Amino acid sequence: MIRVLIERHIAESLESAYEERSRKVLQQAVSAPGFISGETLIDAHDKNHRITLANWRSEADWDRWLHSEERRELMLELAPMMDQEEHITVLEQSAF
Image (cartoon, rainbow, N blue to C red):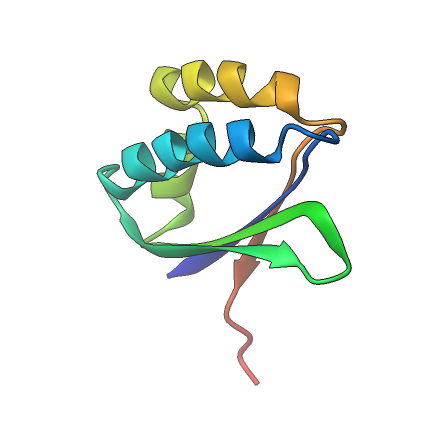
């Protein structure tokens, strides 16, 4: 299993529009092969900084979703609401 950390920063005053559209992304990801679970958090010190932590069966499953046409189309709706590029970090469990 891997975890994927996705960070996005929403442009001022677009939070509610972003929330509505980001739910679509999550709904589609849930049905993607290899998706296990996920949660979205709001930075307590910056309400426009959103963090999604998703669990995937494998990096190959994540890559398939990341590069899918479906995600690409959904991100075309989200990208105009962000004032920075999304930042993605793929995490593995430590052996320690």
